Image (tube, rainbow, N blue to C red):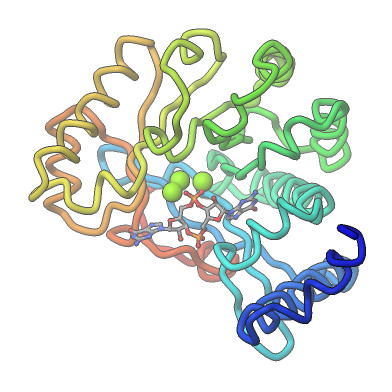
Length: 277
Ligand code: C2E
Ligand code: MG
Ligand code: MG
Ligand code: MG
C-alpha cells in the first residue's frame, strides 16, 4: 500500500540523503528558536550617488548563531521562505529598520539617509502587509520617504493587481520601491509599466564581468536604457572596482552599491563610515 511505503521511505534513503534531511530539520528548528531568542541583526551596506556621496544603506540580515557565529542569509532565507519563518523574520527586519530610521532622523549627518529593506514575496503577499508596514512606520515615528522596499520579480508571479494595489497604497505614503536582482527572473517586461516602481537594481551577476563579457555589458546597458525610458532611477549592486563604476557611469548608471565603497557592516561600523555625505 502506498501509505505504508511512504512511511518506510526513510529506510531506503541514501545515508547522505538522511543526513541532509536531518540537517534541514535542525536548521528549521534553529531558525524558529532564533526568532524567539532574537539572534538576528541587520548589517548596513552603503549606497552612493554619482559623486560617491552616501545616500543610504541596504539592510542585510545576519544570524548570530551561538555556535556557528555569523550566518549569511543565503544559508537560511530560502528555508525561512519555505517554512514561513520568513513572516516573523520579515516583520522583525521592518521594525528594526524603521526604529533605525527614526534614530537617524535625530542625527544631522544621518537624517537624509534612506534604508532599503528586502521584502520576500511571501511577506508582501500577506493580506494585511500594507497595514502592518504603515503601523510599524507609525509606531517608530519613521519617515516613510526614507524607507525603500526591495522586491524581486518573484513577487510578480501571481495576482499582479493585488501587488500593484499594495505598492500604490504604500507609495501614496512615501515608501519607495526598488526592483532587486533585475534581469535574473523569468518574468515578462510587460508588467514593468504597471508597477509603481522608483528604481531598477542591476543584479551583481551582470556587474561582475561587465568589462570582459560583452553580453553582461549589453544587459547592463539595456537595464539603464529601460529605466530611463520608464522614468525610473537605476542602481548597480556588486560594484567592486573603479573600472566597473566608470563603465556603469558611462552607460548612465551613477548610483552604486558594492565592496568598492563598503561591505555590509554592523550598525556601529556603518555609522563610523567616512564617506562624503
Ligand atoms: P540582495 O538583496 O541582492 O543583496 C545583495 C547581496 O550582495 C548581499 O549579500 C551583499 O552582501 C552582496 N554584495 C554587496 N556588494 C557586493 C560586492 O561588491 N561583491 C559581492 N560579491 N557581493 C556583494 P547577502 O548580505 O549575503 O544577502 C544575500 C541575499 O539574501 C540578499 O540579496 C537578499 O536576497 C537576501 N536577504 C538579505 N537580507 C534579507 C532580509 O532582511 N529579508 C529578506 N527577505 N531577504 C534578505
Ligand atoms: Mg536587496
Ligand atoms: Mg540584489
Ligand atoms: Mg543580488
